[in-house]
Image 1: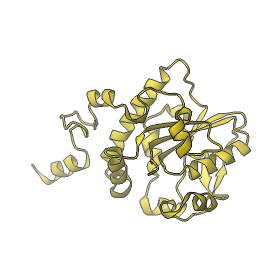
Image 2: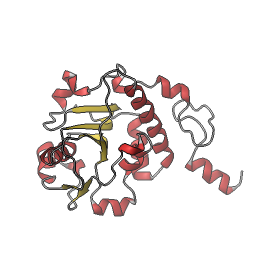
Image 3: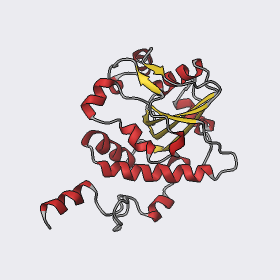
Image 4: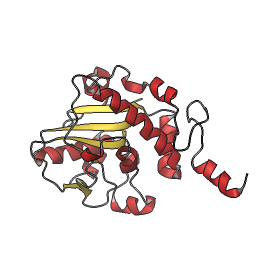
Length: 229
C-alpha cells in the first residue's frame, strides 16, 4: 500500500464506524447500523421537552422544542471530540448520516412540521480562526433540507470566554449581548442547531434574541445532551 492510499484510508476509512463492515467510498455508517440506531429518542417524540427528566435537567426558558440524537456518551461523544479537536472529518460524515436518518424518520410522523429556517450557533471569531471551520455548520448542513438552512442568520457580536469551564449562571452572563440577528424572522418558526447541549445557556440566549426580534417559536436541535450527574 503506497503512502497516498494509506493517507486516504486514515482520512476516510472504508468501514462502518459502528460494526466495522466494509463500505463503499463516501460512507461511514452502514445502512443496518443507521436503521438500528435509536439513541435518546427511539419513540420519535416530536419534542423531548415533554419528557419530565429532560425538563428537570434543562430549564430552557425560551426554547419551545428539543431534539437530540443521544446523551453525550460513546460513541457519539468520542466522534464529536475527534471531529472538533482532531479534525477527523470522517466522524462528521458518520454523525451527519445519523442526523439525516433521524430527521427523515421524524418527518414521516403525522404531527411533524419543518421550521421555516434552521440556523447554526455561530462560533466566536477567535475560535473560528483557530479551528478554521464551524463544526456545527458542517454537521447539520449535510443532514437537513438545504432550502431551510440559514448559515448567517445569527452572528457573534464579540468573542466570549470559553463556556466549558463555566457554571450555568456564569454561562448566561457570559453570553449577554453575544449574538445579533441578520434577517427578518417575524412570525417564523426557527430551529437552532448545535453539537452539544450542556446547560442550554447558549441556545437559550440565542432563542431569547430571536423571539425579541419577532420569531413565533424557536426549537433547539443538537447531536447530544449532557446528562447531569
